[in-house]
Amino acid sequence: MKYFRFIWKNVFRKKSRAFLTMASIVLVLVLIVVLSSLLEALDYDTGRTKGAANIVVQHATGLGNFMPLAYRQKIEQIPGVVAVAPQIWFGGIYIDEKPQNFFGQLSTDPEVWATVHDDYTIPPDQLKTWQSERDSFVAGKQLVDRFHWTMGQRIQVRGTYIPGTLDLALRGVYTGPDESNIFFHNKYLENSFLGRLEQTGIFYLRTEAPEKVPVVCDAINKMFENSDAPVKAMPEKQFMLQFTEMMGDVKLLFRSIALIVLFTVVLIVANTMAMSARERVTQIAVIRALGFRRSQVLMLVLSEAVLLALLGGVAGVLGSVPFMWGLIGIIKHTPVAMFAYNLKISWATLLTAFTAAVGIGVLAGFVPAIRSSRISIVDGLRRVA
Amino acid sequence: MAQALISIEHVSKAYQRDSMSIPVLEDIDLKIDTGEFVALMGPSGSGKTTLLNLIAGIDTPTQGRISIEGRAVSSMRETELARWRADHIGFIFQLYNLIPVLTAFENVELPLLLTRLSKKERQSHVKMALEIVGLADRADHYPRQLSGGQEQRVAIARAIVADPVILVADEPTGDLDAKSAGEILDLLNRLNTEHHKTIVMVTHDPRAAARAHRMLHLDKGVLSSQEPAAVDRSRDGRA
Image 1 (tube, helix red, strand yellow):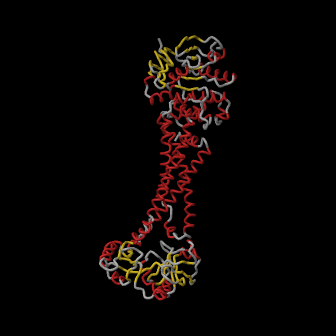
Image 2: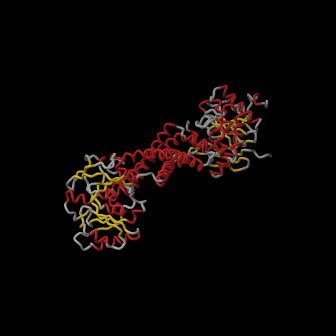
Image 3: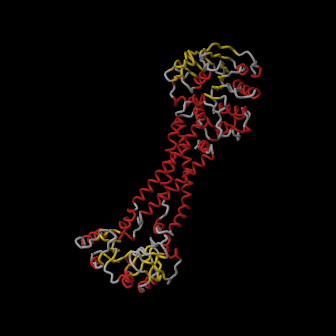
């Protein structure tokens, strides 16, 4: 501790250089915090407990193919299944094709919707009204806030791969882990333009308990394995991971960017430390002459690098919080709004960023520190300071 | 017969440049007693600073033995030598070599960081050292805020703060005007007479050398003569 003032003063020996180096660390740490948080957000649903008892059934060949709706009754007979909701992704256009106007539109069975989505909350009277009106919908609170919809307001959504336009009235607002979708009646599709529904995109179902999920999945898969439309039943979490797995390359890209940037800042800080140590050869020779040991010189120079990186680290971690708030605010108005709900800075991310800062300091300071500790006193004193 | 404080026996030093060995000092024999003030003189390249560095324990001889207070400094390991330097040697350089980011107080405190003294004890030692060199009122000044003479006095305070037995001074007045040089030499005389420091000083200046008890002449690495100083002793209180 008695060396702290000496270390501190040497760090700020050239103030502008120290602040510029710290600024580069701050930027890198903000980037690392943002990228790490995005990666965590992409690993959707990891913290949910209520959804752990849910299963999604899709066509074995992928989401592009539909399954017979008649499977529903058979699935409902499997022991452990509480409720089954057939759902179709409408994929329509609201207002225009601008990304900020995109949201998920899913047809479902309102009678079992609340049962299968047990982690959503909706006032009972709103649920009842929605269930009783076929041309109505419920929407996530975030979506309602985003478009400033009012109860009873009608919206039109133009179909893309499903022909026709939805014309629906808002009858309910739900809150939950993902508030970026609207849900409307399967019957509405049937009555309006698809004719009698015989197929569905997915079955979304709830089991009695998370322990039942593997058994029920096996039972469903076996039940239809020899049919014309074999299915793939999986826990909801695994279903969501399919989408993030599609983004596997994006994750790899994020990680690569983070590593490259981290490596670059190590080089920047190492260069700063090397310059600083080179400029102080005489000073280091003097303190060695005064009795400082090689190991003490090594620790002093290394401590300077770590202190510089730590100061940048603290500023970077603190700076990343308002930055993330701003980013979440922006993402909430984009097609990937669902990520905004999972996008938060975890303590683990902050700890990672802080560890990265210490790592930057140690890696960057190590070589200059070793070199400084090896300076010959006689040669160092011979130089003109 | 009392043992000399500094005993140099058959010391040679050669530097290696690529495959060439360049001799700097040859077969030096020298004894310096406690409380002596010795001036090392000689032309550039004669080996004065090298001999001073060997005495101070920042360089090691190629041959021979250097003992200080009976301990063989020339055979100490590096870590041991560093600790020994901190306890026994005070350095005074031509260009002062103060740490520019530290105040006068912090510069003087630097050698004490290596000791087990408490913060309070360190403060008291530093204050005393600065008082001895007459700069107690400049403790908070940075080197850039001091004149050359004042900087050298701070450097002297740094050299004496840990109460070493020996002060080694390499051209301590070489970068100063005549007035400041005189003040520094007065101070060295005072440290020698009042505080009983043994001083070994390298100098080109005959007037500076005249303040010493003994002048040693080096020429091409060989100690050519040892003579008592005969002039200008009037200001050290010994005349």
